[in-house]
Amino acid sequence: MKFDFKEERILAVVAHPDDAELLCVGTLARARQDGAAVGICVLCQGEKGQPSTPIKSLAAARKKEMQAAAKLLGAELFLTDFPDGTLTDDYASRLRVVEIFRQFEPTLVIAHAPEDYHPDHRAASALAEATSWFCASRGQKTKTGAMSASPAVWWMDTVNMSGFAPEFYVDISGWQQTKEEMLSCHTSQLLRGNDGDFSPLTELMRQQYQTRGSQCGVPAAEAFRAHHAFKRARAW
Ligand SMILES: [Zn+2]
Figure 1 (cartoon, protein in one colour):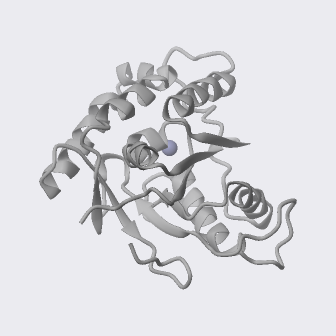
Figure 2: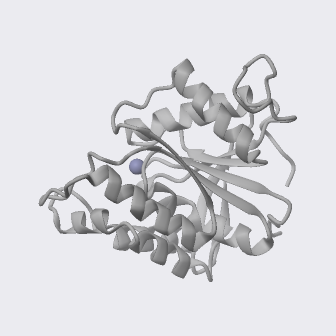
């Protein structure tokens, strides 16, 4: 059985520029080829992800990197510009993400796993989960009106697969190139691969899609779990 994403509108909600590339962009690229509309919502600026030789105006540099990557995929890009480390699941932040959901109208949201290692990723996960409910609530007012239904939610793998138990896999064989080309847009982060405290990202990503692929018998895969909550669960 293979998913057909043709009728879907898929929004990846991630904490930092480059998170989508590492964890779910192969799936987005496959969905694009099926005919789906895809979007990436990046919540934080990524301005604290400095390499050992600091880059001036890193937030601006990372925005450009993310825009170039999204363009390669043909994805609509939403940036909320929260400073790194400040992301929390509070009411004001929820409303900002609710408005983005209402503008894009996703049928499927791909979000960080609640057990992710990074505090910003966990906050992004909680925000995406709350928003997947409130976007369809007419009582929650934002500029754009309420969606008619909540989107389905999938939790995505964690970086280095740490602590994530997959429920299913998406075969991304044939889309590895898109993942690699998009990741290569993030030059500020690739520079960090030379730092002792940061893994070389391309290697890490390759190892991950190959390992997830080997677990399900294909050359490359991305791993997910579905959120089995009321009105967020779907039949595929
Ligand atoms: Zn991140």
